[in-house]
Structures are given as C-alpha cells and as structure tokens.
Length: 254
Ligand code: 13P
Image (cartoon, rainbow, N blue to C red):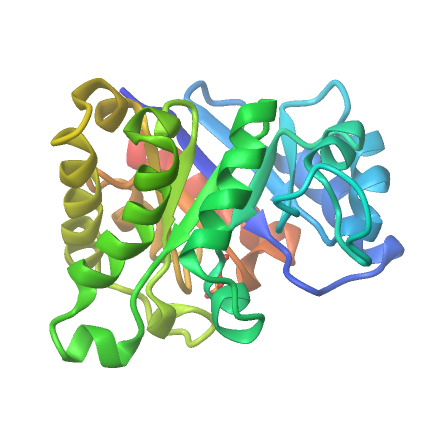
C-alpha cells in the first residue's frame, strides 16, 4: 500500500513569526501513524528557519518552485542545489498559478522536473484542467499534455520516486472541491496512462489531490483507491486546519 502524503503549499503567505508558530503547531500535533507523511512548502525566505525547526522530526520540507538551470546569470531564481542546501527534500513544479500567471509552459515545467529529479530532489508535478476545459470535455486531454511533456523529456521511469498532484484549477482556493468520485476518475486516468508505459512506476507513484481540501472532506478523498494524500493551500496556513486534514488521512487508513 502506498503511503499517504499530506503536503502544505503555503504559497506567498506568512512571515518569520507566522512560519515559526505554524511549524511549532504542526510538530506538536502531528499524528505518529505509520504510512502517513507530512510536508510543508514555505516561501523561499523561510526555508532555512523551517529547516532548523523540522530537523530530526518526521515533518519534511519542500519548496514551491525551482529553476531548471544549475547556476549562473538568472536573477531572482533559486537552484536545486540551493534548495537541498536548505534542507528541502521536495519541490513543487508546474503549479497552475505559475503556469497561468507566470507563463510556465509544460516544456519548462518538464525541465524543472528533470533538474530536481536528477539531483535527488523529489518533484511534485502539478497537473489540472480549468473549468472551461472540464465543461468542454477536455480534462483528460489537458492532463495528457501536461504529463506527456515530462514523459517525452525524461521517460515514464522519471516518475519513480516522484509525486503527481492533480489540482483542478476550478477547485483551487474556491471552496469548491472535486467530489471523491470526480477526483478518483482523474487519478485513475493518470495512473492508467503511466501504467501503459511502466506498470511498476504507475503502481508506486503517489498521486495527491489538491483543491479546497479541508478537515471535513479529507477522509472521503483519501479513502479513494488512487488518491494518496493532498496538496493543501489555504488550510495549510493554520496548524489546527492542517492537522485536521492529517487526521482525515488517519481516518482514511483505518
Ligand atoms: P487550496 O487548498 O487553497 O484550494 O489550494 C490548493 C493548492 O493550490 C495547493 O497547491
């Protein structure tokens, strides 16, 4: 059985004081259950502070994006080695906000995925359709293109030890969650697409759901057979809310 991963994407929120308080709160209430892992992805300036707090605990650290380049004249960018130097084990790539607001193409996202993966940083590849896509029946075509860019660049085996997050754009920050059946259908499509290329990679890859996950809907989502945890935005900014989602993971496993 795959472990469940409960990941917090703090986005561009917080301060030093808030980061410290939030992490202290999560550490104080983290479930010790086997098979449930937890991860926080703070903004770059707070990585070192959070790394200091999570060192030696079961709470893991990740970043929200990374450069596809190793080093050099890329003003404002942050490299894979810098993230590792600051205690990160994971990095989110291709979040829909970066695709839509910052113009990241699937090819650029695939390059970021490859840069992370080849250095041993676990990429969390975000995929997901807009409401227009869904209503036009294009959900699977959109996911196929986003996933396909990574497969074309690095092969299906690149998803060994990687994570995928299905985040329907219409559910992000809207309070509107995909139903467990809607999410499961897309997760099964993602796993099936990979299974056609490499069955063992498809079986092992963790596929998270993201989009208005809360304490009261988490258990039903995580109980679905192809949903292996969540990528949480708004509800990861308060320890009690994030821990309620972790309890949903515990309930889904019992
Ligand atoms: P919300 O949980 O706020 O909907 O955000 C989801 C998300 O974008 C996580 O990456």
